[in-house]
Image (cartoon, rainbow, N blue to C red; front, side, top):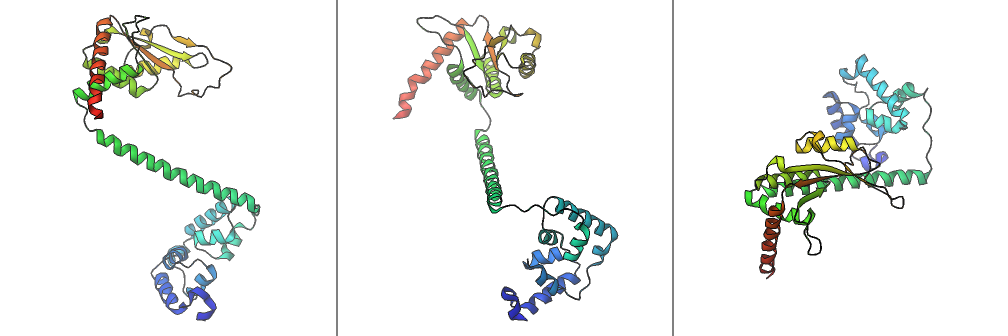
Length: 286
């Protein structure tokens, strides 16, 4: 018999292990996974003569298995796949699902496309997990933000995103525009650090004409902790029919504009702070 089973040459040794597992109350599926025997004929021969565990004979267990077999068949599984999944005999599978329509056969090219798509979906999931872990580790590296950390971050953030004075266009005003909620929160924390009182802040929304303006106002008002009714008149951006906008959908809320009233003196200090940072940059390049 050893020669008739190919790679399962040591049949008697396998049978002893299979019988021991069967007598220990294991299902065929558990025995298959334990012994790595994926040929159902060989698996059934290994436990031939050994009655199934009592728990598999319970009417409810059979009913559940039958329902699962029918569900799998309706999803397009083959008899072999259902046998391996449920650890039951082919005759049982046939009895349970023979009234159901046979799965449509897919041509090889379609099967190849499906396999490629599954591999790609798996690859994307792996990449997403790598991204998540990298970002989580980087977030931990920040630790607790000190007062000076926030001060320096705020100066750089304003100079990158805030309004600036020009020799040809004097605008010594502190005006900040951004669509990122996190950026807005850091900016407001920075203003508070500088001692800017809440009553000096003026808010308005800048948004495309096709968006939900009122929903955007409510969102930004909730984020900054003020009544939406206090917002200044919304700035509406007209749509250019020659461009294809990607910032659409329910998550598009436009930009929030934050102006500090009587901000000329503060603006001058911000520009000075930035100049001080720039002056020290060359030393860091050496």
